[in-house]
Length: 402
Image 1: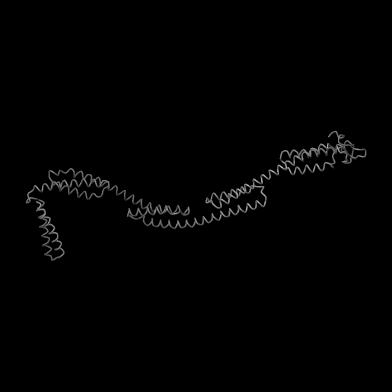
Image 2: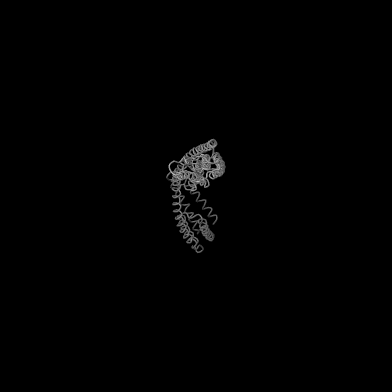
């Protein structure tokens, strides 16, 4: 730029010329000073133009600038260069601008291709989102997760650019229709579910009422069966609303627990009593088994009757022990009876104490009949006659056996 004479000159009247391959052309007039100052002035203008070209090229190469905008600037500068009021190597700058124009056009083509690719990709993605939304609307029953997914699709949709307005509008209508369809189907589902939950609440309140009616019962086995049946019905029933379900269950469970706790307490007390009875009967059994039957059968029989009376008064024992205890007691009773039968057969009939006892009972029955007859009480007479006949028959059988 310092060699101004290589690219321009100022003639005697102050006219400034620039030199090009096509020849000289006037770029201005300089009257303010020396010709060198005039050339320097127009050279600085050329330097400014070169600076603008440098900046445009740098932005184009870096990708920071829009290629189409850069191309327009390059064409503008190239078109104005033939009439630019500057002094400098215009031919070299023109060639440079021509090369930049070619490069910019290539980048414009690349940008268009990238934009088209992005448009195709954006269109494909929005189409995928629409198809997913339509499938969810038609099939999904995961109400919460699907609702969340629709929100995610919408958020992604808003960030997708590049689809033409008409196509984007058509895709949006499909997406909106799918979302509305899902919303209606979800609303219908929950409306039905609410109705079912209300029915479930009514049913479970009835089950609670039934359980509360039974909770104070002492008819243990049938009531336990009924409460278990109510529990089975409860488990088979649909659930009420979440908050209500928990409260209903607490009431139902409280009624069940009230009954089974009382039953457990009663059974526990009964078990303790039966264990005490078992110890008592085991002691009585040991006492009975220790009786010397052979030495004195009659005394053994009297002792056994005392033990059996105490045995009866001792009450119930645990079921698994009762049969064994009764079997052992019967064995002792059979042993005493056999001993008494043997002793009876060895005793003279006239000296048999059992026959004497039976005869005394017959005499006593005869006296009761006489008193009833004297009193004129027909019912007492009838009862006394029946008792006397029964005792006489027993005596006759005993005497015959003797």
